[in-house]
Length: 403
Image (cartoon, rainbow, N blue to C red; front, side):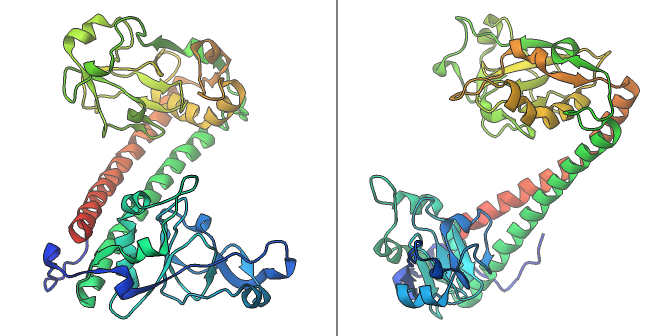
């Protein structure tokens, strides 16, 4: 993945630990009066926590700008290039590095590094401490971490050479993770583009393809919601039948990182909701519209849906599963706007699915498209595998370096 430095030796738990106040100056900011127009829309960078993203690294420019008058009248103090920017109010724990001198509002506790610590090393340390930082927040309405709390956080402090090597390794991992995620998006866009090329926009039906109500192109199978529906103490970490939960059916398909099972005896008591290979699962409550395809590659032979899902069993003389899935995904925003019900808990009842029109081109065209999707899915599988492996490596390195 990347070249190992054979000279690099990480001493782990025996390393010196120091408090952040021993190696950094912790500073905050303020907000110039918004009622004074002359303070705003200048050319001086002034950053807020909302501008920091999950993958923020080096910040070169702020969204909002202030004037020299605002700086002078509001007694703002700039922080220099290389300062580690840490959000101290909700959301606590967003972090980045200042790519130039700038100012900020009061939602930060920023760390100006001494010559004992690398900005990049401190950045990665804080990236791994989001849970800790949030646990240290104080306040009844809005939690905040104070300057004193930040100053007293302990950090392992190896030599600058080791700090740089650690930073390099972690940055290399995140670069690969970002690249793999971008590749997955590009492959998904390729699948979508091919659909539009062959069949047009399914919402406006630009190619005037014949349509059928959704209830005529597939059998819709509900789950068993009767007296035998399993309660919490009837779920196990490993048993006969996987009982799907909301986390298992995502916008990208099945995800089995958090699973629960029921016994064979319990499975036999349930009448409806048992999956067959080739079925499509659709979420109909809460996060509606997620689809997953139960292919031969899914590693569970016995699976059931929960009460927030239905099974879509395609009429194979009319519609191909992969074609249907892509079409439905492209329609989902329009479906939510038009027929989803329930404001607190959005729902897609079976009774309303006959309002969803499905394009039905020739089976030859559908099968041609499905073959294309299968080819792209193979590429996606390889990319996802690389992404998962790199994420595991990154997580293990963060644990190794920072605990």
